[in-house]
Length: 438
Ligand SMILES: [Zn+2]
Image (cartoon, rainbow, N blue to C red; front, side, top):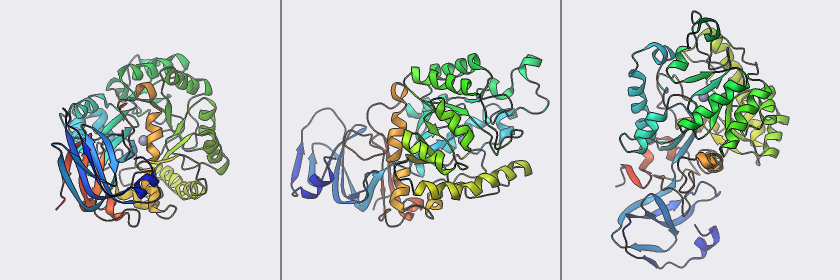
């Protein structure tokens, strides 16, 4: 889009677009939430050429041979970006993941990816797992699903958050046997700078767009204290150096000020949770441009977890309100939305989880966390960005045509997005995946 002003000042006319070999779609009769602005722009026309948005105009657009979509007075907005997914294990249990039939988790992942796209989530930043094959199949159009920014395998220290060995699985240093999670490609359980460097570089070789480490305790993991810090400064710095040298960045699992401050000192640019952070740490992140990619963990008990894990979840859950309260007072902090759906019986509430943010944010701020705020985060993948043709998360000229048309005005009522029936059109990469416009 030229600018807010040029749109507002444009006289209604017709813009003619010439003919050549591209596939064109014109969207008419919509209002626009672009993912960045505080207001909605009334009566907008959008031209899509192949997979990119090429024109946004208040004038009618006449394009030779174009397919015309009448948006029926709905709101055109960016497809949603869930900045914390684990697409290879959304609804798969950890025992099935590690010890079930080898192809079963993948079959579920294929289904989970399609369902995610059909909720309006057109991009998922995958925060760890065996994901490269599914990503490739989606990108090739073999199966439907969101774009995936893959982290590849989690990096975890021994006894860290992603060390999911059973008690009978002795450490490989003492048994010579590779842990099951490592053998199946879910995790790199590594200790010391050389192993961290090798793991990070191996992920980058396989196509990771960013590196994911566990820098502190977690609630779903069986043995680590929630408040523990994981990986030494030198190990964290090794991961950050490997990523930076390849033009990308490290993101991390961490809740606490100790873990997050050590990681920032080591050059890590994105905090993947942060629910137990204090004001000084959040202010530091705002000042130093470190992203907070967090989730509204407001359900304090999950039936699939044991008592130890639920007690840890309860602490994280209590921290959530405190963190969002501070965040709501720090407008310069880069905040993105995610769900971290992982090992859950049912993921259908993914987009409804946006409503959990309403105690702290206006709908427009919530929608930005799920769209335009993600643009710069995803772009940090730099040389390793799997989708380098244009920005993602915004409706802008030159951006990817990942778009929704929703019934109503989501800036006034989030239900326009969170009620799936209100999402009338889902487009990814210029291709329509859902169209229930009248
Ligand atoms: Zn996660």
